[in-house]
Length: 236
Image (cartoon, rainbow, N blue to C red; front, side, top):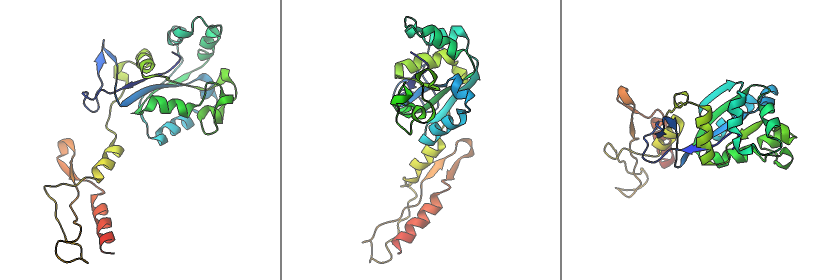
């Protein structure tokens, strides 16, 4: 299993919520969650901020994070599938040698994309631009772990985090982008193109009005700018 895995939100699950089974978090669907852990050498080398920056700039959403000195029992359980390998004891000791940063990231196809961002297990095989390709050279000190499957993600997230330690929230940046390309058909105001007679020209519609919870409805803050930009194009 190694540190990591992901989970996806089922289509039937409301936005901002996750399906729960046996009082522990599970997910399934298009929006996935993955487990990412920065290992002791990554922490010691002050790479925590750079790694978080890469995932944020890629567009993924951080929904859980903790800085801890993991117990031997937790690490043994995490690497249980490697218990018969000759390096098992050394791996557990290495992970127990210092604090780690355990994180849960959410986003579309985050498991596969996260693994690509990490690079190969052996840094010598990792391409420049990946985390391991840029920051490490030895397989025994490859600074980071990421889930390799959605199934492992469910297991690992539940091992390292309690459901209440994960935060579900709206990604307003994505929501705003979706709203910008819509129009309110009910309140649409059509205007003929100034250079074409009658109704021959394209129409301009008023921007969509969006809900804002208890505050009622608000016009999208960028709607006026988008409308003015559209008018300037039509009017030359």
